[in-house]
Image 1 (cartoon, rainbow, N blue to C red):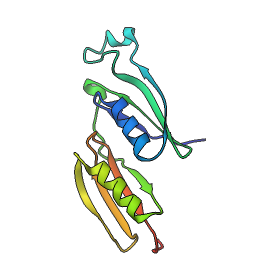
Image 2 (cartoon, rainbow, N blue to C red):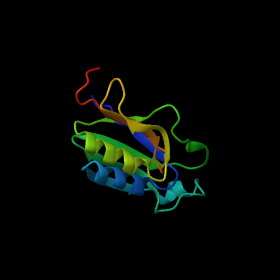
Image 3 (cartoon, rainbow, N blue to C red):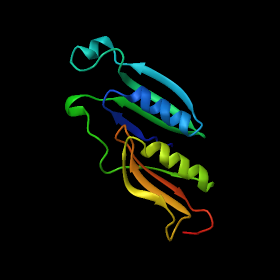
Length: 137
């Protein structure tokens, strides 16, 4: 059994998943466009939009698709957390994710980690970047 986060995007699935793969040193799996017959029932959709896409980051898959109308809802109760070993790398990843997005908790030392930050990226996905480092939880 494998748990696979499946993210919803508002027309920028390919851009977002490609960005995440590049940022975290992963690989792009596949991008399947919306089928022409399905598009007939979704006025906002085009063949440029992604019905299913996936990436692999260190053996861990993240998938997603472009959603429209009532199908789309920005993330609100789920965030992705990356736990990293290197503090400067964690800070750099957080900064890249936060650029053009919204920072809820700036990257800084906490009682549980040498560095932690919480943000929503420019694609509407919430991220937590954690570097436990010398601290134990």
